[in-house]
Image (cartoon, rainbow, N blue to C red; front, side, top):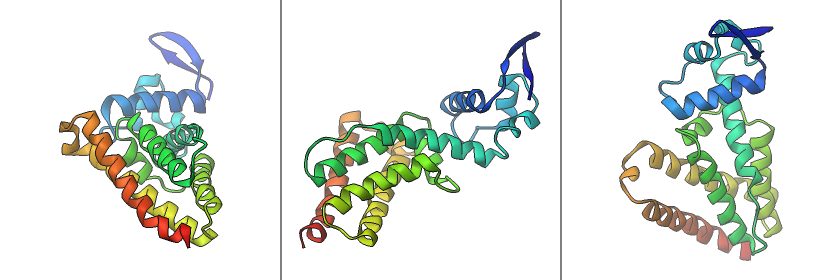
Amino acid sequence: MGRRRNKGRFAMPLDRAVVLKAALEQLDEVGLDEFSTRKLAAALGVRVGALYWHYPSKQALLDAIAEHIAADAAAAPLPDGDWAERLAAIARAHRDAMLARTDGARVIACMSAPGPMARAFFERLVGVLREAGLDAEAAASAGDVLTSYVNGFTVEEQARGLRRRSTAERDRLFAFGVSVVIAGLRPLVED
């Protein structure tokens, strides 16, 4: 563990937070396809093996990035409105958190196992649906549908031609899709 070298001088000790911060910076700079633990180690002035003291694999590091994104989504405040307004706010927060990172939606989609923050985000979503009147199984299924839509839309937005559209147009398309999902859930909630 110890200290890492940085241009001939000793720098701060390497820890999980330092590694994660550098990994987030690398992801934003080069994207998921070019993300590399070898490049990350070089940027930190350490050998690749030093990273594995803190994250046992590249996937574990990507999962930590996904947790960071999920934490941002989970921290977004919810409006006092009805279940539909709160659900739409959760969807927007989810999308915004993924868009804040280069290829953030792909990182979320490739998460090997949800960590505490990802579970907290999903439990918050399910909680809104439970308060609206859905039973636990239906609320979890509805939560899966909504997060699948948000993830899929955002992957497309970050990776494909949606970037050529204006931000306002992308926001409008996203809101329309969320409204379709919510409209599909309304009969289940109002039964």
